[in-house]
Amino acid sequence: MASYDVIVIGSGPGGYVAAIRCAQLGLKTACVEGRDTLGGTCLNVGCIPSKAMLHATHMLHEAEHNFAAMGLTGDTPKVDWAKMLSYKQDTIDTNTKGIEFLFKKNKIDWLKGWGSIPEAGKVKVGDDLHEAKNIIVATGSQSSSLPGIEIDEKTVVTSTGALELGKIPKKMVVIGAGVIGLELGSVYSRLGAEVQVIEFLDTITPGMDGEVQKTFQKLLTKQGLKFTLGAAVQAVTTSDGKATVTYKLRKDDSEHTVEADTVLVATGRKPYVDGLGLEALGVEMTDRGQIKTNGHWATNVKGIYAIGDAITGPMLAHKAEDEGMATAEVIAGKAGHVNYGVIPGVIYTHPEVASVGKTEEELKTAGHAYKVGKFSFMGNGRAKANFAADGFVKIIADKETDRILGAHIIGPMAGDLIHELCVAMEFGAAAQDVALTCHAHPTYSEAVREAALACGDGAIHM
Ligand SMILES: Cc1cc2nc3c(=O)[nH]c(=O)nc-3n(C[C@H](O)[C@H](O)[C@H](O)COP(=O)(O)OP(=O)(O)OC[C@H]3O[C@@H](n4cnc5c(N)ncnc54)[C@H](O)[C@@H]3O)c2cc1C
Image (cartoon, rainbow, N blue to C red; front, side):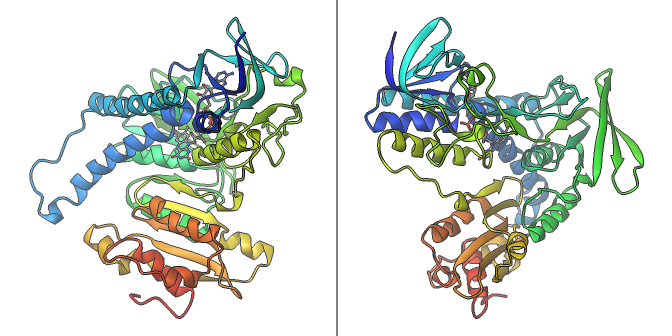
């Protein structure tokens, strides 16, 4: 029986980062993974493959729509679907092998197989029993569907099936206008599919800043995505490789049907804790099936911790990573910390959408006095040169103190631009601090500075 200071169950961004940090802090560490490769949902069927597909199809979009205007003429590239899928797979492989390398470098044992916890302090993998002073559960999440919808991963698919379709569909229905639905909907729309997004709520991307939601929907509509909002899907049936989706409009209860070659069910994800034996151990769970943890990611059972998608909070890779690092530090007797008020969220469509902190809607509800500084990418020279002037930067600051409370960006490289404001928020900066920081010209980040200036005496280029 092998004995460890820490055994991490699951090698997604939460688990592998926790394992590396534990090893760096001198703890004897193993990581259990049931998949054939390391990296979890994120590297195998999530963040990385979806971004590869978004990148390839964005290149196609640029070639089709903007090359000629820049004087780049000639044949527009054609899509070689098999090659595009193999580019995506190569990207996955490079990344998952990278984690294998990091495990070797940090002397982390990869215990191959599905793990369970027969009792506190023990982890079983196959027939092998291992001892662990501490166990970190990082088993992630799985797609959730709607009642009555049968997923076959061919015609009716989750994001996993959508990343490896046999061919590009002519018509795709996406159920759910959240991040995953819109990213993958964009991919297939750029590849020529007619994409209809059906959403239960009256807005896309629930919880996001209202102004960003409206601009985002307008821009995606311009790109060809069709939205049916306020619609409750009743059933999805399949016949001869085609699907029929039945939905009811909530405003008048009228029933409609639409046919599609592929239906992507993107209605959210739920924690995956199957087979761990948590119930028998008496580990407390929330009523949404998440593992309950305290401020130090400890469950109610001594020596068992949990992080990432399996616990509460946004289901994001970087949130899982931060929890992984912090939990390792707590186990090593240090002060692990995650600031849940400054976790950015990004949608990697074109334009990108990124946000951090409070929305106007949240501040209004809380009765918090605020001011807004906004700057359109129309006033940014670099964005205009690159045909990327759609969108804006919006900074929300405390009305009295000018401290930044939130930031919302829709526009080019929004997912990278947001981090300047994350750092500013971590340091408790005022909008004026950003406004007084010299920003290189010509960069997209000048739009961030201009929005900060707009929180004070006014933007210059607007
Ligand atoms: C299509 C898609 C796109 C996404 N894009 C983004 C994005 O751009 N940015 C972002 O931040 N997030 C994105 N996400 C979300 C992100 O993937 C998750 O938030 C993140 O992977 C959660 O990390 P985790 O470590 O908690 O779990 P996971 O990554 O889910 O990893 C858990 C691992 O545990 C293993 N496991 C489970 N049970 C056991 C067991 N009993 N024994 C052994 N192994 C076990 C699983 O096989 C899995 O490999 C995306 C998700 C999807 C589906």
